[in-house]
Each structure stands twice: as C-alpha cells, then as structure tokens.
Amino acid sequence: MRLPKGIYGITDDSYNVKNHVDAAKVFLEGGVRIIQYRRKEGSIRQMLNEAKEIRKLCNQYGAVMIVDDRVDIAVLSDADGVHVGLEDAPVDEVKRRFSGIIIGASASTVDEAKEGEKAGADYLGAGSIFPSPTKPDYRILGLEGLRRVVQSVSIPVYAIGGVTLESIPAIKATGAWGAAVISGILAAKDPLEMAKRFVKAWDEA
Amino acid sequence: MRLPKGIYGITDDSYNVKNHVDAAKVFLEGGVRIIQYRRKEGSIRQMLNEAKEIRKLCNQYGAVMIVDDRVDIAVLSDADGVHVGLEDAPVDEVKRRFSGIIIGASASTVDEAKEGEKAGADYLGAGSIFPSPTKPDYRILGLEGLRRVVQSVSIPVYAIGGVTLESIPAIKATGAWGAAVISGILAAKDPLEMAKRFVKAWDEA
Ligand code: NI
Image (cartoon, rainbow over all chains, first blue to last red; front, side, top):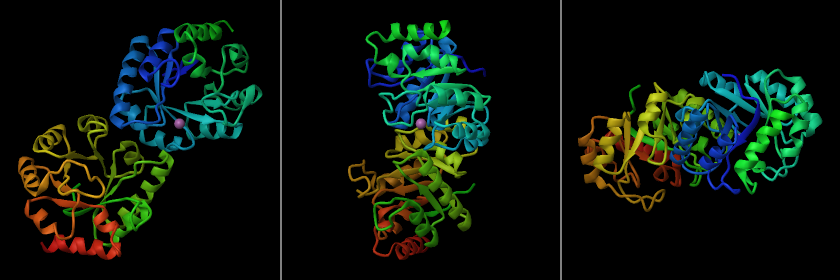
C-alpha cells in the first residue's frame, strides 16, 4: 500500500473535538488521507469498537488507517498499520509476527531513523519538529534535523510535533513525505475548516 | 495442545512475591503446569520483556503459557494462548484473526459459559467461586454454580476466585479441569511450599 503524502491526522479527545471518532471524521472530511487512532487508556473492547468505527470511516474516504502502539487493536480492527514507539513492541518483531501490516516507527535522531528503517519500518514519524502542546518536553529535532533524517533514509518520513499551518511550507521543503497534526487541527476554533487549510497549505506549498 | 489439569497459576506482583517473573518461577518450581501472565499496567515493551522471560521458564518446565487480555503480547512472546474477559477482544474475533492460539474466556454464569464455548473458547475460567482478595466484589458463582457450568459445556473449566487449599477437593469434585490460584499461593508465608501443597492437594483429591 502506498502511503499518502501530506497531512497525517492523529486522533485525540482532549481538544475541541471530544472523541476519537469525531476527530477522525474532521480529518477525513477536511481531506486528510492517513489517520492514526491514538488512544492511551480504556478497555480493549472500547478501543476496538472505536477503531472499527474509524476503520469504516477511512474506508469511506479511501484513507489509510494506522493504530498507535497496539498491534492487537490494529489486527482486530483491520487497520492498515501500527505505529510503534520506543516503549512499544520492537519493529522487527512486529514485522516477523504480523506480516502484511504497515509499521511506522518514531525517530528523534538520524541514528534512530536509520535503525528504524533497518528494523523494517515502512515509514517514520520524525520529531518533535517544534515544541508541542502534546509532548512539550520531547526531544526537539528541528527543521534541519528533519532534513537530515529525510536524507538518511529511503522510506517516507512524516514530521511530527508542534506542526503549525505556517510551518507546512518549510516542512515540505525538507523533502518530508508529510506532517502529522493533532492540536493544530483539533484545538482550532473550527477544526474542519482548519483541516482543510492544512491540506491546502501542503498541496500548494 | 492439551491443557494441563490441576492448578493454574496466575502471576501478580503485589503479594509476597514481588514480580511477575518470580511468581511464575514459584508456580513452576511448585509443580504448576499452566501459567497466566496477568499484568494490567506498564509499557508494551516492559510487558513483552516479562512475557518472554516467563515463556522461557515455561519451556524449561514444559508448561503452558497464557497471557491475560493482550493478544499482542501473547503473539509477540510466543505464548500458547490468551485469556479474554468481557472488556477484552471478543473470543470469536480473536479466533478468526489469530489462528492456532489457545483462547480462554471468563464466565460467571451458565449462559456466559455456553456463549464462550459457542464463540470458540478453548477453555473457561469460571468464577468467582468464593469471594477473593483479588476481586472482592466480583459476582459469586459458588461450588454449585461451578458444577452447573462444568455440566453445561464440553471444554475444560478452571475454577477461579478465592480458591483455598481447603476448597480444592470440593472444586475437583465438581468435575472442574483445574483451579486458578493467585493470592492463595503468592500471599503465603512460604509461596513455593504452598504451591507444592496446592499441586499435591489437587493430585490427591
Ligand atoms: Ni506510541
């Protein structure tokens, strides 16, 4: 499966959109074509039910669906992929046991990016590009770091962390495949309008 | 894979044995041949590392290894099975997506037991038999309820909840396949000695 370029929407329920399914709707209706379901708490049954809802929506819009951290939820909801961080299952082990699933890995340095690619990741989430409200203390990669990550691997790299509308042209100019957005869209006064503006900003940059 | 009869040890880290791997060791050294790794919190990486340790131990003792709730951890650690409750992934969906894995289901009533069997569960955990320190408010099935559950299904039934050394003969007399023990062993002054006594009590009942 080819990964869509451009805006990568990550769900949340703590901003102006109050649940994960509605967050996915906002992204999709706004033109986003890759969605990550990222829920950290709740029962497996709850997560699975939400993931199935989001799977249906993604199918309607022809979008790729990724689940954060949880390969069980990803497989059971028929998601396209899973995104794993350093606290999650190792990329190579997920790849060995769950063939056919897209695996995204996180990278904050060029070394982590190369390791992720070598372990078999299909794409990288590289960041934080800027300080972000979601992960304020996270290691900052910056635009120059992003450019180096993009140049050091041959898999798609999505920028993540503190991505704003204004920063989209500079992110695209690094050669990044796309940019992951959470609060930039979900905390906006009009999230749907903002989703459209992000998508447009990427397309026109 | 044939499920071992007798004592079914469930790991915990809050009694006299302070971590899950040591709890598994106590059970195995005491003669228990089916172990459930039950950890509710912590990162996926942590859980996976512990599960792999317990997998190695179970291999050394020729024991069956089950993971509670999490089919991702079960698959990635090469466990034999997963135990799912009402808040977890549905039995039939796990069975469809993860072939070859043993699936245990929880039942507190005859109806739930029949549903679990029909959905494809390979065994049941039926309880609570008695009030237990682990789940004090859980629905109480009792010995007579256990007997009815055993008679209503054709898959193995492990009794769970408040199982004491003294209750083992009465539990075995219901036709139950075995009895799950947590605090009965792990909260004992000498957990290893107590594990041996439980195993012996079952064998001699
Ligand atoms: Ni993560």
